[in-house]
Length: 171
Image (cartoon, rainbow, N blue to C red):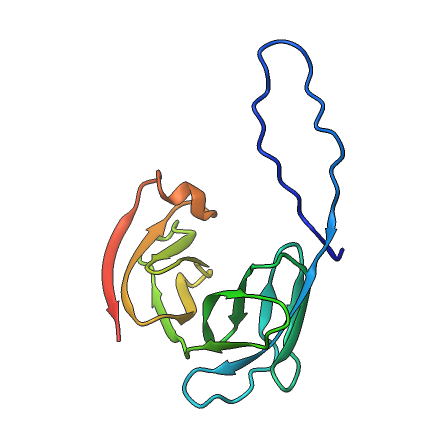
């Protein structure tokens, strides 16, 4: 914890061994900031921030600190009722993260054996189908989405599996 990942791209020779030498891990930086609602700039407590190897949550004033981050940090900010955001930040500068209110989309799948519904838009989201065949997505962004019912439990299988598709524009 607190160290930045070190990467080194090398070409492994056809013959002989390869010595990478010393790999030195450097201390990471702390990214500090505040998470607020995009519309009214009110603090958002309980937002989850996922950085390089570190996850933290915002406090009651929306403040957070992500430790062990690279000089140019990229992290995801999520809140249960807001649209997730990809954020780029630098240390020693207060980062203001604004999250937009999301739209709830729910429905019912008519096929008894459907296990999940995938929403493909700006992001890819997966909702499990409940025993009563209902599904619910929280905090989707506004715009065009494609919803697909699937017989698989996991999203990676969806791309290649049999799908029943219905496109919907979220307003």
